Image 1: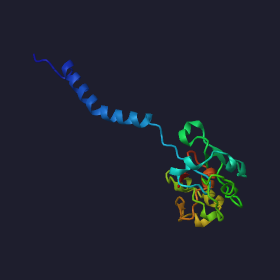
Image 2 (image 1 turned 120 degrees about the horizontal axis):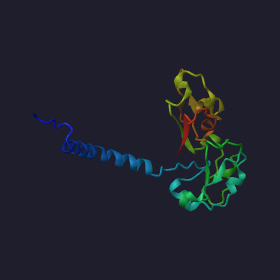
Image 3 (image 1 turned 90 degrees about the vertical axis):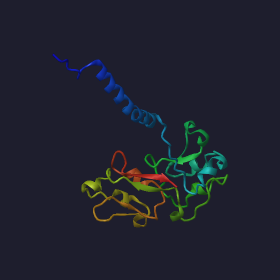
Image 4 (image 1 turned 135 degrees about the vertical axis):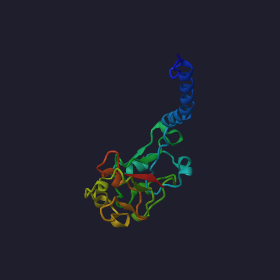
Length: 192
């Protein structure tokens, strides 16, 4: 009588070892991705100079924070390291409302925010659309992002029933992100 070796301990050990060797690189990769700290995007107020010079130039005086009529500008927390206490905008909480006069750009004593005299010259960032999340992808006739945009069809438009298309007129004010009805947001601002 011959013995069936399909369930022998040596065979199981061999296959387990082979599977472990195949899965280990994938598991390590996923572990590194999950445990990595995501890079946090900082949206600066209108008129901000290049990010590479911003932290060194900003006095962290809070004048732009005080001047903002929408209370959209806030100082970054200590967890932002060298950018701590510098001004930022979180469009999901309170976007730049592109106020008349853009006062935040005129009260900065350090030159970290340069005066902006025309609102269409703001360059805080640009909106990005995530089509799979946008309700227009499922056929809903949502027009909130265009309806709320202070720059209208110079910044955003619709091609038929598809998700919005972002145009060169987008300043990154974040009003579209703020009013987007989806969770997570189908439209977000990427810093300039």
